[in-house]
Amino acid sequence: MQLSQKLAFLIAGAFAISTSASTAQKVKFTEYNLDNGLHVILHQDKSAPVVAVSVMYHVGSKNETPGLTGFAHFFEHLLFEGTKNIKRGEFMKIVAANGGQNNANTTQDRTFYYEVFPSNQLKLGLWLESERMMHPVINQIGVNTQREVVKEEKRMRVDNQPYGHLIEDVFKDLFIKHPYHWVPIGSMDDINKAKLSEFLAFFKKFYVPNNAVLSIAGDINIDETKQWIKSYFSAIPKGEPVLQPDIVEAPITKEMIDTAYDANIQLPAIVTAYRTPAENSKDAVVLDLISSVLSGGASSRLYKELVDQKKSALQVASFNYSLEDYGAYLNFAIPNNNVPLDSLLHDMDANIADLQTNLISEEDYKKLLNQAEMSFVNANTKDLGVAQNLANSYTFFNKNTNHINEQLAEIRSVTREQIREVARKYLNPNQRVVLYYLPKAK
Image (tube, rainbow, N blue to C red):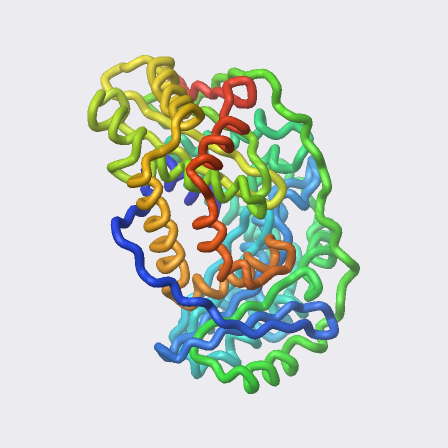
């Protein structure tokens, strides 16, 4: 999910809620490595004649350097330009002409490319992704074209979008040394001044088979698929080992208060942000549950109190933004009828203090488990979701692909006492950024 999508999700408060749980089925898979280091994950699902072919590269904006930001997101676009065997501009046309869909997205930690085809087009999907990996055409024409595409995307999704810079303004305060300091779309000045040689070097370093996961889910024959994968991918040369950043931030020990201005909004917002642990930690699982308690639907605590009862907020949300190295826990509110932002801040803090003091009820606890199970089922309903979740599990959970099947057990193991303790551990005023996000006169 791109940053702009996450922000829209946050502002809308669109958290799924369910009052009944379904029986979650285990996701079966086969995995192995090619000699060039490409990790392959295969999931067979004969329920529909559809297949999802995906490649996740372990490169995101955190792999960039100051002065050369936005590269990972830029390559999300650039690698659709064409290859030695696919004419410029033909990639997406080939997909559409064969009944498929395709796209890509970039986060701070990875870039994800995919095609969804009728299952009889599996070989086409494999060929397309092998072409992208083996010999894309990266030239000045493509770079110049995609510069304009990325600029327009930034104008539409960030610069001209209400609250479009909110996450950027929060993260630059929350992270000082770590590359999470900047957002995936990066700086247009950096992209403008970047040389072709720098783009070529970035590709050579990160878009190699030993830094990628090929994840396929759908109506496939496992043995046949293995043979096709060998045919298309085994000749791609292995790259140099990719070392991920290892940057430690000093703990936040004093509340930081900042103000940002947005010419695209008429209503202000108040945000509190806490730096939290990596997504593969148990505490991150607990923080996900805390966000559901606070804003998981119309019956959640913040929504009921601030929107329904007091009518002091038009929108309110609590969101655990999990990433590979750290996370960010965000609380967000837009006032109603000129309610002071400090009043919303007081009420959000009071709800967190209650979690830090009192155990949630057994009824709320059971609802959390139901929500978690339904979320798991929904995430693995479609082949593309399964392919992505398998790749995520391998890439971000210590090469443990089976994490996809361990998530529910992890959640069910969380106790009410642990919810209280994690709230006490991370969600304190002296550990946060408070951002007043205000309208700017045009």
